[in-house]
Image (cartoon, rainbow over all chains, first blue to last red; front, side):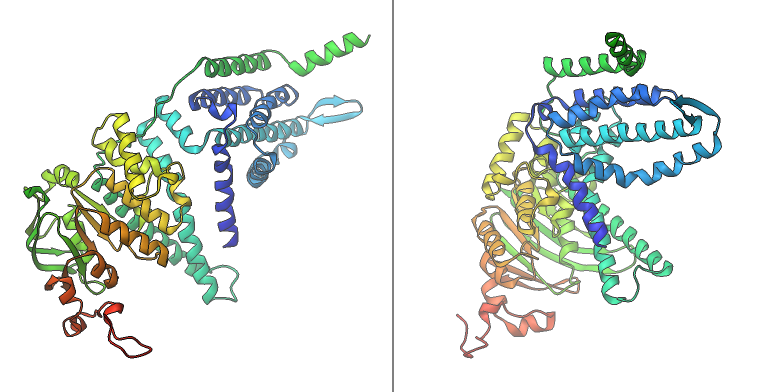
Length: 270
Length: 252
């Protein structure tokens, strides 16, 4: 129960960062969304065993977070929260693929471990970038940008309403759990039968609320289109932001930057 | 100014499960009137309010708002002239920020952006909540949510304001604020509430609903002081019309 409520508070804390006023926050949400999209595409386009060439790409989420004054702790905490799912997927690779793929000094690394590291790194980069995007843009502005970039209207509206009512839903679930805990102090969590009926309760309450919200919307002239205030404006700095980063992603994809830099450093040392 | 008139004629409604919520309700409310709708739980107050806004349509009988009968085809006109503030503000504040929510109605009316901004600012100013404009709705206190919900309805400039339990779940200061706000509105007002002190303060006229019928309709000062009328319909006179519990003295 407490976990549920604190998860809710955490959910709001990343979003709350979007209220800051740094130059990164002031960029057009479409520019940030497109750039992050290009970043995600670049990260997933690397081969399954590539680890070192991926590293320069970390510059994007780190720079965006640093310029946007985003504290590392809440972002890292969410990465840790989601990591068990990825570990579960990645952990099979070292067991299934034991063929040696790389030798660093005397240490031989199998292909499985390489792909394990690659999956973890990609997970950190992609989720980290998405979290930083929300922290410097806000969920609502991100949705508005999605809409302006041509995402289906119904999808954008669903996302907005989902985000708005997630808090109400979790609140309702927390109240149900608290009511259960108060009347069943011995049980750490509801048994299967009780949990089933609680879930049913939650569904019925959700449906009833959805009906009331729909009525409230109709009463204020809703005709199927969720209209928003405020126009987005693309400026030169937005274009430069997107263009600059996309050029960097292309460079990082085409050239193995760590190897190049290593070679240069070694060359200079001789 | 007939478009401010609200009337119901032998209004009947049964929910799909067969529960008869309204069993022949009739009344006429004139321009500028302020009417309290009172009744025990399940008396049909909320169902009646939903009929006024056309959110439910009657099984038989008719509701008229101004020149229009409330039917599926007249809903756009009805909803331009009548604003309904819901009991649970969470049902009503569905947009990301308070400002977006207050803009929802004017945007649906097709107003130009500058005019929408003006409506939003004016409505928030009217309820004293201009500082809440950029706040996310889910982070407001109960009293702030209620103010935002009222502003969200005022921004469309309705002629008739309909409110369901405007003082429910509010602390005394927030309740006092809503009360003085309601008194300052010059709209035709219909207020459903269990808070009979509020009804006495805000509404000159009271309609008592009991089991889906109108049990009494008249001046609030008379109806709410009549304990013999209120008792059978499971209500009590407002606290300040009851004798003082400490000294036994009669109220004013």
